[in-house]
Length: 278
Ligand code: SF4
Ligand code: SF4
Picture (cartoon, rainbow, N blue to C red):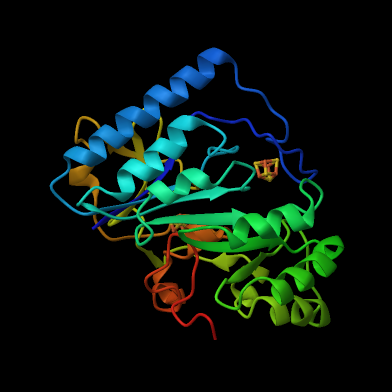
């Protein structure tokens, strides 16, 4: 199976998070048309492959407010060669359309942004989701009361993850507070030293952009080839990580010594632990 992290040219978001460079950015109509065409080309490619594919959409901004991402999630979820299709989202979109997606194979990686959406509206949407999903929050100290409330009020079956805030060093006492909410917080607390270690990316996991340019992951710039002319395929093989460290879940989950494929077995892309609820 080939796992693909897809990130097209879309770079706009309807939210305005203080910690994000994409907050309230606008794509021009031309940029949106290009993003739509790129996504439709990608989904057509997936449809034609004779092997199994899993896809995680990791847009810079928010994809599900665009009809073409909603359609791609639904369509891919029913393809016989697609094992899982997931997307990172702020869940600002309506959710009724998700009833058309395969509940086994479509999934959402949902992030809660407390300054951007009323708590009750967000929780009601999560409760209504008919597909697999995780929910998460950035470990900003100002978010702690929101995170505690979410953990208490979301169904026990919903995994609530916490991402360490970029650049923040947590004392052991602070980390313990976040670990009460997310028992896997320790994986996010520090960047993982990764240089020279085996990582599945570049072998059975790849990153693809809107032009079909294939890299091993979103964080290593070296190009392996192009998806659409097949030039990436001869380049796929096991290879060590060339970066000093890896601090993003969508990267280090593939770093083999961490054994996170065991922790998240069956839910690696949408970040749902195998043993959940605990
Ligand atoms: S919802 Fe996500 S992409 Fe949008 S502004 Fe917030 S962090 Fe950025
Ligand atoms: S460990 Fe992270 S940075 Fe290194 S190759 Fe894997 S995903 Fe990329």
